Length: 577
Image (cartoon, rainbow, N blue to C red):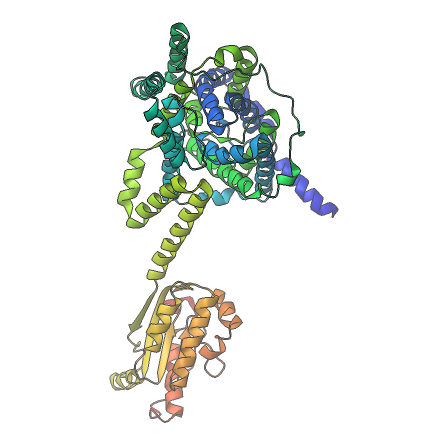
């Protein structure tokens, strides 16, 4: 027990910040402080917008950016990652907020955070690299569509209609707008989105999102536009952490949403950290530490009235592009947003909701990488299918189902591709030390087949059909040295085929069985069927000599010559297997 606890503590200690992280923060403080300021300016409207979209209000977005941003920066596995509320997480949270309210968000955040910490302790971070690129691209495209559609009610200036499905809500919002158009809101949303999109192309380093939001707020206040509904009053400061409104009875029903939040936080955060690594030289994130940091962030943020968070790709990219070199930049971003929460809440409360909708519409559009989508679509039909299915599932169902569907389809197509690589070809008998006449006589009664590639469940039954259709010969030799992998299904199918051939009076011998395949064959009882007189054959010439001996004893062949001694297996015989 003591040793087990010691290992757990050692594992936790390995995930905590090291002295090297603190030293790194002191090397270029000026660049990091400037980068943190820039990221905070970019993050402010996004945090407000995602808080509003989640259903908990702009203050929830700010609280998340401050608390989760600071903890993930300090305990995470990337020096450059910036965390906070994101559009993808908002998509998951909307139905949770609608059904369970703040208590549900708290329960989901605590549970998902604990799951992420557990994944970090289990060293699960490295497995995220196996998510195929078409799934990620389709997932991102679907999220961008959902984020854009979620902004339609605020962009049109209509109350958000009831409903869980974004397509249904969007349709109802369009109908309400048709009955009572609010062109002021449309103008604000459209102007902010256009300024952001055009400005990003003209001057990528200028934070046009904050420029556009400030301009929209000034215009709305100066003109007293009632149609430009503002965010509303914000609390001056963060709430005191409390578990008083946590409904423990709902934890069981919220387990599935918590799994969805944890999976999304892991996927998006590790993807964002990988993007940061790719934009720099010499930076390499620790995936397990990143999961640990995100876990702590997701446990803490809901306690302060926030929502679960993830690593934010757009804010991380801004952080890298503005010269950040350490965690100090992300910590500075969180500190500046905290100052805004305490000192500028009255000003922030006057921002029009339509302006924030424009920010998120532009963000959704910029999430779509047309070049990447075109490359995936042109790569293979399988990649295009996976991308489209994942995107449609994200839009029509939810994010967890979308990822599961994408992974399932990608896995099935990959298995089919691997199974199609398996080959079962007849090969000529090696002449060895046989004369021409003797070789011709052996070829009348012995046939050799070479198995190339994997012999597993996806390819095994095709192999069974081909093997059992062997012509009327007396001995079949299976050359198995090129079998790359074999599972229990492949071994059972091989056993079945050998038994069927033996019932027809055909002896089956095998050569070149690899050591790793002996256990699988033996476990299903197939190994003994492939042995002749208790022996297995290392090379094909040995198997031919064994087959010839069998035929001579059966009286099928005359005793042509004494059998040469069988030499021990050597590496030079590999080609003859």
